[in-house]
Structures are given as structure tokens and as C-alpha cells.
Length: 236
Image (cartoon, rainbow, N blue to C red; front, top):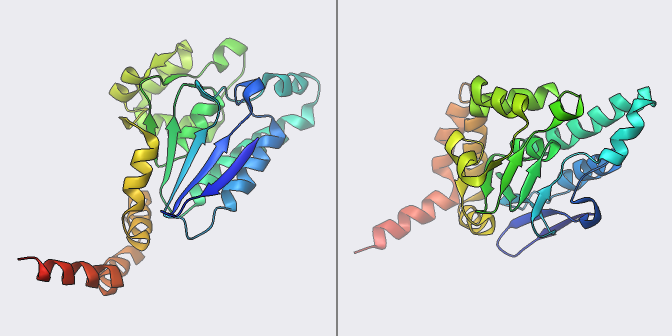
């Protein structure tokens, strides 16, 4: 259902593979996703969240699983916490994380993509957040990430209308960062220095952190920088 691989270039890939449910994830799968992401080796330079199922990134939360929440009141918090744990596990990783959205991305699938640092869409990608049609809300942290990325107006548009948008519109409003091949983007990231990538990610997350000034200065002592300077000096 959820698998982890790491190639020789340092690209780790967590893949969703639940074809019968179009990669819709029940509560147990959100917990599994959190654990699999936490298990990504620190040696990875970049992590990609992707799908093995053609034409779909994720249909979001599994409606068959959600149906039991009508009667099972304690299970509601368990579902919310399991989903939140998966998002926080992604956000906690120090390496860059890329969502490679090839096909449909709906509901909690959008929240999953929003937890990543970079959302790369294929031309076939399309997005929708349909909870309003189902009579339910959307987790507060995911609404906050959506609004932070798109602005209040476009976030309201997606949440209130529940209407789908294609890859081009997602790129126009900032939901997708680019329309490209996610594997190619991941490989281009992995070509760079792992320590520098982690420092840059920390800086993007909180540029006001006092420790970043020392970290920036210390980076000039890195072996990668010394090697880069040596190559520059040898260039005619």
C-alpha cells in the first residue's frame, strides 16, 4: 500500500499503491504513511511523495473508512490525529520533500501535497477539495497551509466551490509550483550538497531563527564548498 525506496543518487521515494481505492487512505494508512516517512534514511538528499497508480495521486481520505465516523464518535479524533501525524512527519524531515502529482489529487490528497516543500504537477494533474459537498470540514492546519500558499481568496474558492482545477490553473494560482516531471526535479535537487539543502530548507521555514546566521557562516567550512572553490580555481 505504501512503499519506500532509495536510489543511488540519494532520491528517496514514498509511493502510494492502493489502486482499488484510487489511493484513498483510511486511518490505518495515514499512520503507516507517517511511519514510512519517518523511516526515510537520513542519507537521502531529497524525498518524493508519488503514486504507483496511473492517473491518480490520491483520492484523499477513504470514504468507506470515513462512513464509520457517523456512529463511531471516538474514531473521529483518531482519524484527524492519524492524518495530522502523516503531515507532520513529512514536514519534520530535514531534506527537501517533493509532491509529484501525476493525475487526480483530491481532498486529503491536496493536504498531503501541501505538507511538502514543492508541488510538481504533470500536465494531467487536476485538483479539488470537495468536503463542502460531503457536509464536513477540512483540518485546520491544512486550511492554514492552503491559505498561506494561495492567499485567502483562492483558498476560499477551492474550499467553498469544491470545483476541480487543472494543472495550468493550479500553477497560475500557486497550488502547483511547476508543471514538469517530478522525477527529473528530484534528480536535479539530489545533485546538490545535502547539508546545503538542509540549511536552505531550514532558512525557508524560519529565516528569523538566530542560529541560522552562525549556520550560514559555518557553511563556508564545508568540504563541498572547498571542493567547489578548488574546481573554480582550476577553470581556465
